[in-house]
Image 1: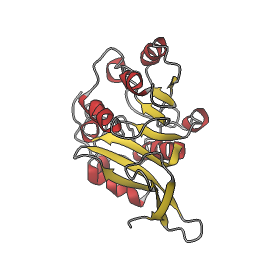
Image 2: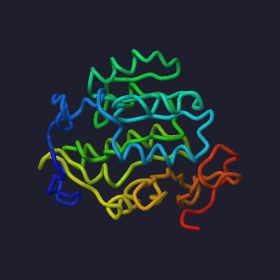
Image 3: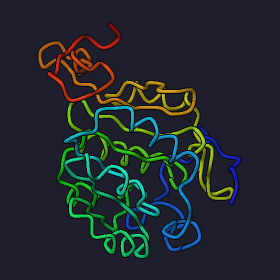
Amino acid sequence: MSVGEKNYESCQDICGNLQKPGLALDRALAVDYSARKTTIDQARIEAELDKMEVTGTNILHVGVGNSQFATRFASRANLIDGLTVSPNEKAYADALGISNYTVYVLNKYSKEFVATILTKYDFIVDNNLASFACCKYHFYLMLDNYLGSLKPHGKILTDQRGMNWSLNDLGWIMTYEDLAGLESKFPIQVLKITDVVYALARIERCPTSGAALYVYNINTPDGGTGPLQCRLFGQ
């Protein structure tokens, strides 16, 4: 496994595999991190999330790996849900016995997502947004799944190192500019938390004018859980 040669723009539009989208779903070495150490990019996301107000929040962790994320944040969060395509990762997570931690064996690129994930989240953590994407259609479906599961002020957190990784020459990589380009396609604002950790903040639209509104917290501009306010996007 290595950094792939394909980038976002060169990815095919539609793969045609509607029943089992995504790559390497049956390759344990690629998807089972239950017995491995936390990756550098995942650790960086966690370090930044640790600086935010997570008390009482709902968090979705996509790709649960060794479940150290849940071990770290479960005592402060209201709940943590996790997604994995690895039965071993789910078994490991369940064995931890964390009462407010639930892991689903579920493909993030699938339409089953919306029928399974019913909670609204303050944060969605995914360090490999496109690394296992098979085509733009399913990548966009994943983003639509995520945005539909975010609270109005919610954020998707990711890391450049994870976006640089792909499965051999099968997956594809993304840059910060690629993420920023998604602002024209989805109701998001892409933000740099650090030089390598990024947030995709959900924005709303004015019901009368259709203008984009950015939902933020007047007492905690970094995305905490204070009173919500709205402003025109870009202001």
